[in-house]
Length: 490
Image (cartoon, rainbow, N blue to C red; front, side, top):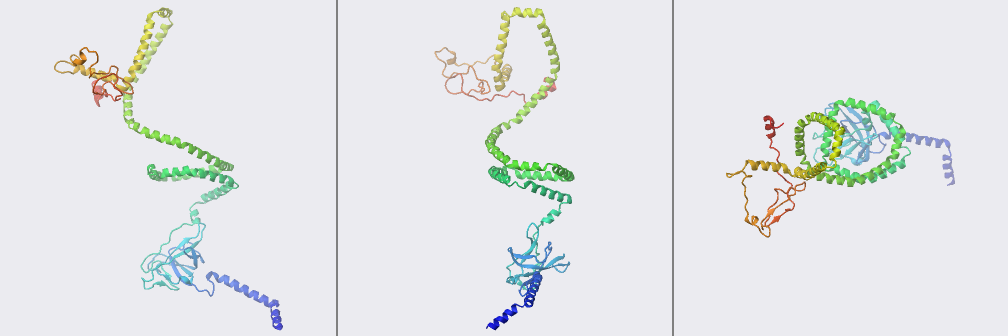
């Protein structure tokens, strides 16, 4: 027993033997790693071929996945000329796949597509196993078979389109790519060491989410007509397409301008961003009552908007008829200036001064001043009645009608008796059916004259609030034009 152990120990103590075994193990490991790309030896696989219209930069040993799980790899990618597949006349690529034997056999209606693994690149082949195993004479694809671009029913396998990040960047020219690299580098320098400020900015943004959500709800409301705005913006963009070279030159000049800006200014802007957002949140919160009041005011102003066309037409009429009068203003001003110069000369004459001193203690000056004061009082009372109720116009129109109209007896001003014996005969109290408004109210609040309602019984004095509507005495349409033709209206 001890002799056997000693012999074994002598074998493992032999350095030549140990070195030979180590070299053999290394050779086997290198061999396995070399052939691992084409599958491990002694491990069975399910080998099939699939045809794709475009390999989309797929590489050898790319993953084959089902539902995101790796089930095999791409061993070969062979370009095929046009016409080798009767159902697909264009050139295509044939992929040789090594799959797990658990998938064997795949149904003939299996679908597949080349997918993008990440935005940084890398592709893989996704297989979507079918379920139809009983509708074809070849219910499933055996080992070594091929999925053609057109299956037995003539249905073409389509790849889902995608865009690689490098392909997207290749759309930009060298100058644009250089600008993107420089902008990315400068942005990294600007953001370095400002984590605290960004945290504050994110916290301030959280406070802004509430008002921003309300704003987005407002944009989403159909009443905002955001879709019409986007359509108009699309039309504007289409209109700007012919001047695209000019806009490109403008952007290039703008890039030069931004490059000339001081780099620390961006850092200062980021430093002030949290406080600016805080102030903006406060301002938006405080502006809500103002916006509510503005909405109420806008709703209350809607009725007055209907009156704007009438007011504009009347203002146009006033300006139209006032223009001839304004043309006479220069001559009137010249005459008025002559009169003022004459009055000034009169005022500077010593004889006039002595005369006014004599009149200062007489009743003439008092009478004149009283007349002006009384005229001012009359105008203050009459002006609201005329402007609001058109009193003078209605009185003139009625007086003219009373002079020119009447009956077979005479005109209304000559003979128009109204007899009511209880109101005419002497009595200790007014008649029971007497209605008389001695001082009708005529101002902007109401126009009582002619608008008093008749109520049963006796009513003397103010008949309570009446309508503010009065008859319009504006000439009918076309009358002024006929008057101008006849020379009766300037």
